[in-house]
Image: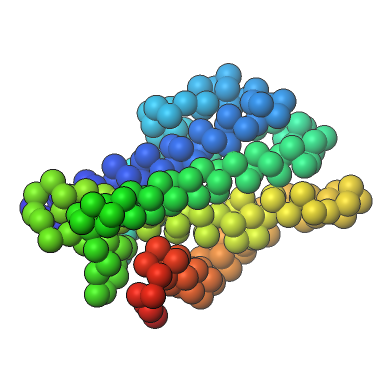
Length: 232
């Protein structure tokens, strides 16, 4: 039963986090001139339109990844007009940036909740860290559940933030690079990204390199959250 309860907490936070990520993409696109996602009902924090668009990435994969690894990963997507993205490359790059920024907001929200809990004597820094225990409490019941939920919110959104910023297609990081390219370089880069094989290899490389990228960032984030704790 405890394992099922933990899985339900992970899935609830996963759906909230991915929905916020994709809704931020859709909202940014709408504000920047592409109403495609808006017309398809994606500018919403209701998870159902996002789940209906990507049921495999938002239901099947997160459940399987939790069963196999004890944490959740998956994906969703936001529709956009490729002609708009080609014509307004920097706007499209800003749309891509909106998703990781949404995850950063949720990481900071969790961090603030931890620090407030410590201020009121509810939370403390644990001796060992896991994805569902980045803070601990001496109490059982509600406060323990809150500590687990906040820990998952922090960990999962840090995972989504770092993974999506890896500059490999088709991840958001590969499009954010457009902000720093000249028009001619962006044109060549866009043709490069459009190749299906490049996107497949990009995902493989991003997945294989993720641990090496994420672990030092995770450790740094925890040592910022708990100054002087010396996690390593």
